[in-house]
Each structure stands twice: as structure tokens, then as C-alpha cells.
Image 1 (cartoon, rainbow, N blue to C red):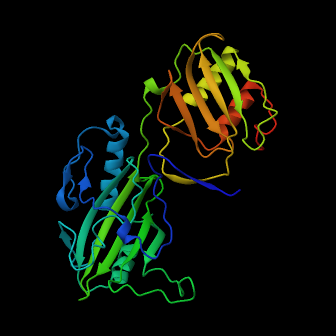
Image 2: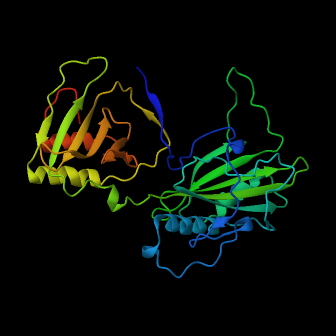
Image 3: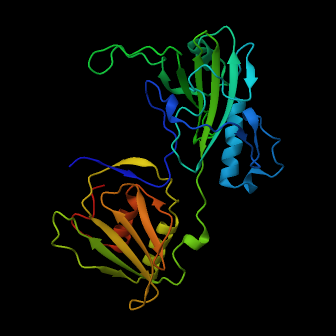
Length: 335
């Protein structure tokens, strides 16, 4: 079996990749969202709040980072700021080139009219004039040099000459962000540029979404592989306070899963489920489940109610089995 494709309710952080053009994939999200949540037409940022960064929410910090990324853009000579997407370019600059749909990503943009330059020239200018540390991480449109389309036919030429460069910021500056610069010309040769800042942020996991403090016992159950639904190990009960505390801390330390679309290993149902109880004979207070091999997330419930999915790429289940001293062939995966 090959890999499966799993889609979560949210999305992954931006990743640069080659494409002929993804201009039509975006949605219009004009304006810079300032740290205080205000949005102004055409991407003009409102004055920054006097609140310290440490006191900002993760979303507010991402908004601040997005504004800083946009401020790094160096307009070409004679460029004029626009307040709305230009006409005559088939809507190619109406929205970001690519959006993941992730609610935990901030998108901010500015638009520019650039005289006396082709789209490729405008991108080359920007590449040469961005502040030190910005690195080209991807490109699309006419900037891609691909001689033949599938089947050996030449790629059709875009009459609007759309092209885009994607830049990664310097290390430590909006590390989960990206600066995208797209350029396009009208049939008459007028070039326009759209600048997008994308910054992903990690939602805080509320204290109410943690394992209840009353949990003193953990029952670990093996879920079988549907292809070999036999030789299932017997459940293991963990009562040692130190081991229980380590497993609880491990689960409570996971972040909320950002979601999105991801390639997953072929899965046939094998996994482990943890039940958290106050006493060995008491009701289940919370549960956690992870498939094996992992697709990158842990399902979590409290009092029977599903909680936000947690992010994990394999270590959680293996660490739990290790802490509990469990050796289940087929469940303890090779390191």
C-alpha cells in the first residue's frame, strides 16, 4: 500500500514549491493587519500598540511579524502604492498566490504600480535590494525555466507575463513566515506588483485542555491492524506515580495541531489508546489515541468530549511505551 492523504480542519504552515502559476488559487485579503487587530486599505499599517511583545497573543505577534516583513519590501524606482487590485491583468493580483486556508496564518499585502520594468525585472530588482538575510526560497510563473509540458508540448506563454518569487526571512525573524512578491503586466505592458507576508502562529493550548489533575492511573490498550486482527497484546495498567506523571507531562506538552493536508503512511488501524483514570476501577477521565505509524497527530478527549487535535510526528506513542516498559512486537517501532 502507498501513502494516504489526510486532511485536517486547519492547515500547514507555508512551504515554497515550484509551479507554473498558482495565481488563481488565492483569495482576496487586502490590507495589513496591525498588532492591535486593525486593518487599513491597501496595506497601510496602523501605529503599533504600546503593549510589549511578551504581552501579545500569538496571533498579535504574527501580525507584528507580517507587518515587519512587508516593511522589508523595497519599492522599485518610481513605484506607486495602490489601494486596490489593478484591472487589466485578469485578476492575477487579487489575492495571495497560494493560501492554505489555515486560520492560524496571518496574510497581509501591499500593491504597487511599477513603471519601466517587466515583471521579471521587477522581481530581479527586489531580489537584489531586499535587506541582508532574505533568501530566495521558491519561484513560479514565467520565472520557471521548464522547456516542455507533459507530453512534450511547449508550455503556453502567459500573455500577462505573471511571475513570482518567494523569500525566506533572516534566521530569527518571523521564522514561520514568508515574503511573496508577484509581478504581472497588462497587455499594454504596465507592470504591477503584489507583496504578501505570510506568518503562521501556534495557538496556545488552554489549561482546560490538559489531562485532569485527578488522573493517577493510565491504561494502555493496543489497537489491532485490520489485516492481522489477532495476537493483540493485553492492556497494560500504569500506576507508578513517576511513570504516570511523565506520560501526563508528555501529553500535556504537545501543541495544538495546525492541521492541513499531509501525506501519511499506509495505515490499517494499528495504534495505541491511553485511558486516564483516578483509580483502576474508576471512570475514564480522558483518552489519547495515536495511529502507528503516526500521521502527525494525537486525538484527545476529556470526559468523552473531543478536544482540539494535538500535533505529533511519532515520538509520543513510542515514548509512552518506553516509559511504561511495554514491549509489544509491531507496536514498538524501530528507532
